[in-house]
Length: 304
Image (cartoon, rainbow, N blue to C red; front, side):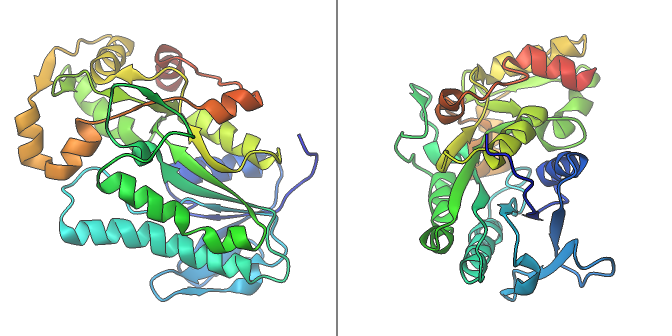
């Protein structure tokens, strides 16, 4: 790995993923700036004002930064995808990413690296085969969103910035994300599998997600799409039973597919009833080591 102490700017530093990464990087003693949406009241050397809605960034605050990390995006799960919701999901990802990419491309000295969020939704919902970074785009709203999301970094790439698209699976960690929504139900014995339960789930522990981001910062070879998911995907049924077991409960319920479709529509079809078996081929080939390669290891670490 390249030995240097990079200065870093993070957009989306207060979310579930961003706050964990911000903490890890600051604990390493690295200088980290937050992109924030209110005028800074503290040390402006640690905060950069931006307003994606109006297309504004205090560009001077990004001059001299080595790494820009983009984790911005409205929550994708939890509610139906109405036309209004889809527009918000698109704008909060694609337009914000395009603004950030365009801005860093115009800097006197653009950063050497941009880590930009994406998702394994790129691959669609065909459960029949394992996919990796060289696999084709899938079908559906999420796949189309991910294509535009990743293409929004084009100006940064043209300026010579190494861009990595973080195609992230379901991230499991304490205090947020998927587990936060599920733990209450599973702890009272009302855990359930969804639909047939056979749909694949590609996941990664929060600890491994953070470690993978740090790995990508401190090496200089990987670029383009990189899958951030464990090498051992599971079915929805396997996930439900494993989570219940880790909590010393049973997951004996099943939520019918028709009920999920009635309640959540397209979101339920793609996120809850769909999935892909995703291989993190680039990370594995580069020598990255997962701390929690299996679901049992991840859940035991998280719930302990």
